[in-house]
Image 1 (cartoon, rainbow, N blue to C red):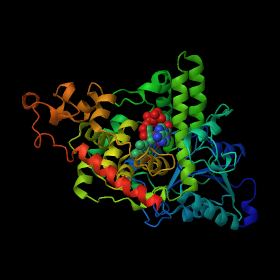
Image 2 (cartoon, rainbow, N blue to C red; image 1 turned 30 degrees about the horizontal axis):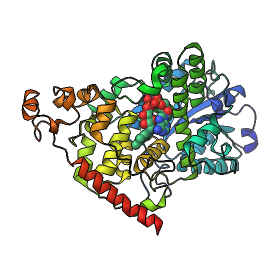
Image 3 (cartoon, helix red, strand yellow; image 1 turned 90 degrees about the vertical axis):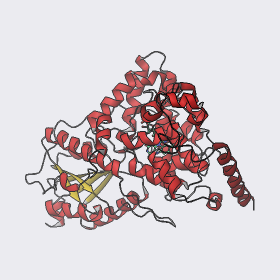
Image 4 (cartoon, rainbow, N blue to C red; image 1 turned 120 degrees about the vertical axis):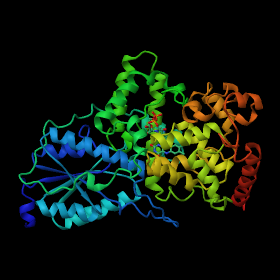
Length: 499
Ligand code: FAD
């Protein structure tokens, strides 16, 4: 088809779905539908583009196992929602750089609309596609929506990129308002002839290990309806006490929206708008509401950092940490991954992660601190494990989270603040309920010993059916000694920074 023909107003528009798997509050979709054109709804499973990132040690950031499970179900939900609007979700597999122009050529599309993303590989892909499509006379339109504000729009008074969270929050939130999110279109007109689609099964997103998804399925409802149901439940329930309860892994105190936000099944703007409405009708919820918004803005901060520091997932933000004397210890890493460190709160978190694809934020900090500081295993090993096992695995949030705990991030916890896994457990899981759920072999221990089974008198352990080294591991390191070792290692970093 000639370029001039493609430009005709009746040429279909391709809506290229990425991590924006929803129909409501979707600027690109709304704009496409508003043109009156026929719409081709395309998702491309692209494992080639995300790797490697531009770093001295290229890492593999193609989607991990838990994310693939999520994606399978999210695409199924999206396909269903699209069918109700009279159209069909077209699935293809391969590099988006090739597939999007190919589908455009197959169906004579006049334009490609999509939502903007911020990962380094996405940024490069968007630029390449724009050039490629426009060369062929196909309009390429990019829309915002994954973030509240574009990274280019938030700057310090001096015009610099923010490296510290609190002023970033102030700059973003002062006088920030969002309008009512746009509802999903009533109908999405299909072209007379739809391009062919791969089947969802042929994308092979579900794990081969058949028992793994059971825990995931029990916990989650991927898709836009599931996302909205989570938000509703949070706004009507946990938001009021969120400021305090968010630190308690034994309570349902947080929103659990992270995978829904990552896959774009819901937007941060919609969360902002609807939480404001809920706060206005719920007396006493102001503090919880503001704390929730601050967490949503941590997500913005992490994405902005990644946008400007594209090697954040691999390289410490503070270069002095390149000199850190890490210990590569495969057996320690394995014990940590399997939840067999002998520290109950750490093991509970790692097992929750394996079973549900999720770990509570407080426990992410405790388990990450244990790996990095008690075991001195490089933070990138933990980041890679989280990448594979989290349903909310997100390049920006994961990298920023690990660098925060390691002390090498932009606005990070000081390295010398080393979490004590016993006192953290006692403080944030005071009755031991979280540990009992995930580490059942020590569940009969009295609460005063649940976070340090090795300190329990022998007869108490025996009465609780706990045999250290047999039914539950002895601690793989002594925390006090490990802390001293970590501080000595940190001393080396400090002195290399002062040279
Ligand atoms: P809520 O407490 O309800 O918060 C609401 C939303 O705010 C979250 O859904 C999330 O989108 C955002 N948010 C909350 N805390 C943070 C934070 N610290 N940084 C950035 N955004 C935040 N989050 C991910 O989404 N993906 C990751 O891969 C990821 N990896 C992490 C790794 C480490 C080592 C650490 C310490 C944190 C990581 N986080 C990650 C951040 C945080 O733990 C999760 O976003 C949060 O636990 C998700 O639970 P929730 O939806 O109930 O959060």
